[in-house]
Image 1 (cartoon, one colour):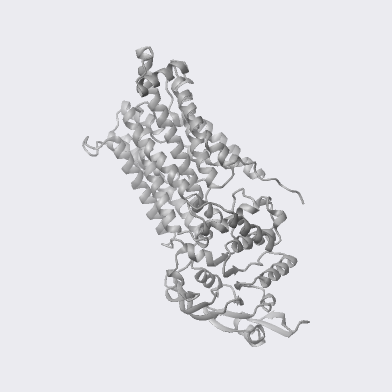
Image 2: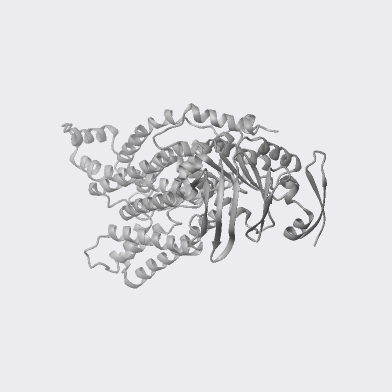
Length: 352
Length: 253
C-alpha cells in the first residue's frame, strides 16, 4: 500500500491577510506598465494627489493617463477577473461539471446579442445603453437555459442530480449557439464594416472604454459576489458528492442553487456589459486554484477571486504592450494563455 | 428514532413507483429492505431520507412529519448513504468525513472541537483512522464505502439509511461492512440485494412492484414460496450454524 500525500495546502489565515496587499500591488503594476512606462513613484504621487489632496509635482499628461485611464481600467480588470473566476467556482461546484463556466451557460452569448442588438440594430431607439442591452441579454439567455434545462430534466428539480447537471450543460450549449447565431445575423444584416470591426473587438473583450463611472458597479458586484460565496462556502462544499449528497447534509438544494446561480448571472451580466465577453478566466482559474489550495471553498473562493483578479490585470497589461502601437482584445490573451493551461490541467488530471 | 410510514405513494410522470406503503420501524432496529430490481427500494429510501416528497401519505420521523422538518434539523437526525456517490475532487478522507458536520455549521458558527471529536469518532468507528490523510481517488470501493458511512456517522444521526452499501464490494468487505452496520447502536434501514445478508437484520420488508409485500423477521419472511413469488427463483432454506436461515438458489423460475 502506498501512501499518497495530500495536496500541500496553504493555511487560510496566512494567505488571507496577504490578499489585499497582492491585489493592491497588482493594480499598481497594471497602472504603471503600459506603452508609456511610468515609474511607481509617479503612480503613487498621482494617487496621493487625488486621494489625500497631496501636492506632489506630477506631469499633467502622466497624471491624466494614470488617474483617468489606467487606474480605473486596472480596477475594473481586477473586478472582472475576480467575478468571472468566482462564477466558474460556483457553477463547477453546483453543477458538478468541470467544464461549467459563464460561456457554457450562454451568459456571454446572451450579453453579446443584447449589446449587438442595441448598438447595431438600434433596438431601444438610442434610449437603452449598450451596457443595459448586454445585461438584459445575459439574464435573458440565462433564463432560457434554465427553462430549457428544466424541461429537459422533466421538471424533476432536485431529482436525479447528475441528469439535471447534464441537462443544464446541454441547454447551455443550445442557448449559446442560438444567441451566437442571433449576434452573427444582426451583424451580417445591419452592421457596416466599421461597426462590425468594433463589435468583433468588443466580443473578444475590451477594456479601452472604461472610466471611473464604470468602477462602482464592477466593484460592488464583485465584492458582493465574494461575500455571497464565502457566506455559502459550506453549502458549496456539501455538493462534493452531488446534489443528493448536499440535500442529505441538510442543504436546501433548489434554494441555494437558484440564489447562487442567479447572483452569478447578474454579476457576469454586469461585468460583461462593461468589458465584453472574456473567456477562459472562469474555466482555468478555479482549476488552477484547486490544485494549489485544495477543494474546500473557504480557501478556494478567496484564492480564485484573487488569482482571477491578478490574471486579468496581467492579461490586460500584456494586451496593451505585446504589439507596439496596438491594443489586442483581452479575450485573445486570456484564450492564448488559458487554453494551453486548461489542456495541461486536463492531461495532469488524466495522469493522476 | 421511530420511523412511521403512513399510506405512502410516490410517482414520476404518473407512473407509480410506490403504492400505499405503511411501515413502522422501531428505535434501535436494524431493518432490511429487499426486493427485485425496480421494486422501489431506492425510491422508498429517498422518501425516508426526506430527499423525495411523497405523492400521497407521509413519513413520520420521531413523530414529526418529515417534510415539515427543516433540512438542517433533518440532517442532524437522519443520515443517508446513497448508492455510488462519487466525486472527481481531490479531497482527503478526513475532508470527506468533515462534510458530515455541515448541518451543525453555519456561516457564523465555525468549526470547533466538538466537530473534530465527531469526525475522529466516526473515522474510528469504521476503522479508517489511519487513512485520514489519504486522497479519495486512491481508495478502493470498500474503503470509499466506509468513508461514506463515516461521513454519515459524523452527522451523529439517530437514523442511518444505507442504500445497497455492499454493492461492488468483495466478499470480505461485504461481511466486515455488514458487521459494522450490525454493531451500530442506532436505528438503521438497509436496502440489500444479497438475501443471505438480509438474514442478519432484526426485521425485513419485502417490496414487489412498488408495494410492501411482506414484513417480519427473517425466519418468517424468507420462505421458499415467497422467494419464488417475489424474486422468481427456486430456493432452498436450511438453518445456518447460528440458527438463522441460510438460502441456496438453484434456478430462475
